[in-house]
Picture (spheres, rainbow, N blue to C red):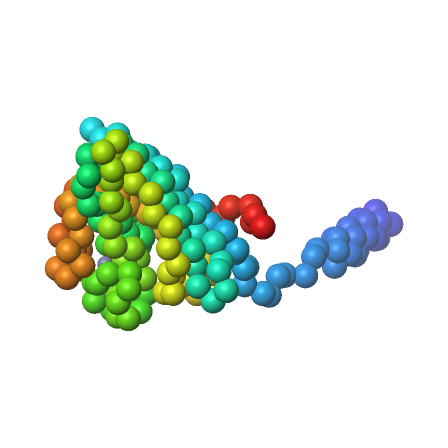
Length: 185
Ligand code: CU
Ligand code: ZN
């Protein structure tokens, strides 16, 4: 008798467990679509470079808007998306190299063959502030090669847009991880 009750209880628990499983939502099959991403740049050890970079959908292209301060006066500073969203190292070397999902050579933002991460240079003014606002045809906000979860790096030196694979842009002054931002109209 006891054995039969235990069996019934076990059966009841099993059935309720099955019902609970059936209540789970269906898995989402579509890949996420992002209309606006943001990176907040923080200075690396011994530097003061900080800023904000946004990436927003502009038709088939991406509008890149950056404001960065804490730079030297009137200088050019290599500006890239790097492979890893890891700014943990004191010198941000943990961010890896330029984001390059298509195996292209290093170049500038207007070149057809370039790293996806090649954003060229920031130009600082007499106050050490740089602003940038341009349309980029290569950056991808979503899909397999999305820049989400990667990083933006500002360098000490000018990117010559030629030297492989870095543009010879020198040390990393600031680094920020690219995250998902609330869309704005
Ligand atoms: Cu870089
Ligand atoms: Zn590059």
